[in-house]
Structure formats: structure tokens, C-alpha cells
Image (cartoon, rainbow, N blue to C red; front, side, top):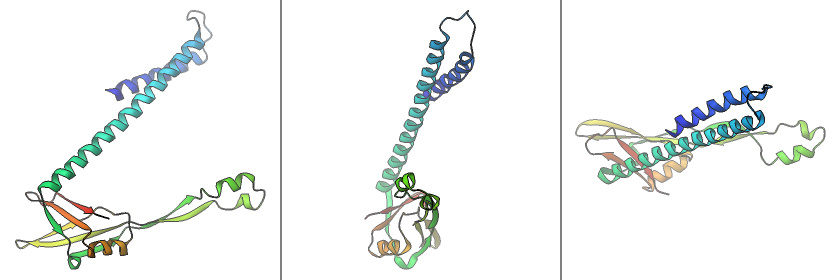
Length: 180
């Protein structure tokens, strides 16, 4: 409901500011005050939209966390066997602006100001595929990506720091938990 009201107020702001921006008539008194009124309506509308988005995001995260907790309490707990794991890397590199160099470019003349401000950043991600045979059926469980490199993920599996929780009734519902 907040989202609908916020969008309606944003629409009113848009229409009102367009109308009163160049209004030169005499029928409506104080057009500048009306213009400011519609801008305030737009700010209120933007606040309502933003707060409804954060509220729905919070509710979604809360629901996901509750589902994970419910799954962990009622699920089969499996300590991973290193030999049944296949490790994959999803790491990538990207160019980002170097935040440490930004103040220097403000005062630097000539050559230093023309230097490239971008640096290459490597983002480490890895995941694992756990294969298990239960009652003659092969099940594969693909983990979420972990923000660590491949060697660290292998280290965590060897030290029993990753646990797999599998729903007892629906083996397609599972979650991996990393304990650091």
C-alpha cells in the first residue's frame, strides 16, 4: 500500500511541478508555493517508495532466514566427505576505481592527472558439488557460492567446517552451512 501511495505522490509531483514551473496565470494564487508543495509531495512519495522497498526486502530476508532455521532443525545433518566433493571456482576480475588515488588527482597537474585511476580487483568465489548415493540413488548437492578461494574451501571441508542440511522428505531442499 505504501508503494502505491508513494508512486501516486510521485506522479502528482511530476504533474504539479510541470504545470507550475511556467505558470503565469492569475486564477491560482501563489504558484511558487504550489510548486514547492508538489516538490514536498514528491519527496514524501520517494520516501514512501524507498521505505516500502526496504521493508519488503527485510521481510523477504526474515522469511528466508526462518526457512533456513526450520530446515536446519528438521533436516538430516551430513558432514561432508572430501572424496565425494568436487570443487569449482567462480572467481572473476573486474576493474574498479582506486579510491586511494582520488584525492591526488584533484591537485595533480599534467601527467599524474591523466593516469588511469582504475585497478583490477579479483573477487574470489568458489562452490562445491557434493555427490552422495542413498538407497541406490545418486544425489548431487550444489552449494551456494562462498566468498573464499578454492584452497580455503577445501581446507574448510577437510576440517569439517561445512555442514550439509538436507530435508528428510524432499531431498531437493538443502542448505550448506559454513562455520568459520
